[in-house]
Length: 293
Image 1 (cartoon, rainbow, N blue to C red):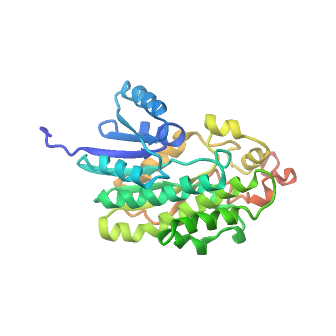
Image 2 (cartoon, rainbow, N blue to C red):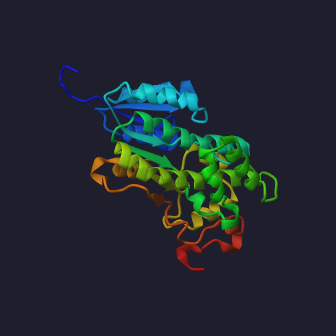
Image 3 (cartoon, rainbow, N blue to C red):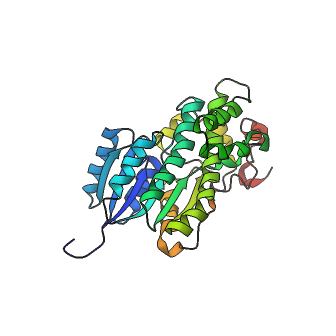
């Protein structure tokens, strides 16, 4: 460039809505932010709106469950001088697909994003967005011993996670369990990447686990289990996307250079207050107003 300044790009998967969009809006205006997702129209609309406010947003369609599309995205991002940040916020909830689709998008998607960007990054930061639901499963439902399969046989890995999700009976339960397992895996995998990525490429990797975030999508899914969950939240509400975006952008800042290989739980205190899968549909276990039981 004529002014000699480095061209920095920040990549946000799932940048068309929710946490991803809020992150895109909060990142430095002087840098380029590449937002991605599966729906072109949504991405173009977000880019148009934010660019009208002085941002530099580019949009690219990418299905993170397809390695070849993630590889193409990483190659495009690498055409800038420096990939400063990758925020992997793309994913689907337990009501948006069958167990296999959920595992492929949420779990394999995390693997593909981390692996493909590792190949093209030198320095910078990768933030994987997991979920507090990954903390809520009984140990018998967490197939952690099967997680390393993802590096050897992806199809066997998907099958193992889908099979574990099917162990809990009930209509519509398996997709929810698959979601929780997929987010538990995302947190695990992020931690597995941290040492290698820093030692070999100086890339910082960590994850963030939000609780219930108030978006149009989650509002449509709200039910009794959500109301019980929010009963365990200190503020008694869900998070605004901007609250998670601020946390992610602050921790991704290079001044937090010693933070890596860990998960940052940001759920209003729900998990530490005792919310688990076993209480999700039990109205008797909802804390009373004021915190008294």
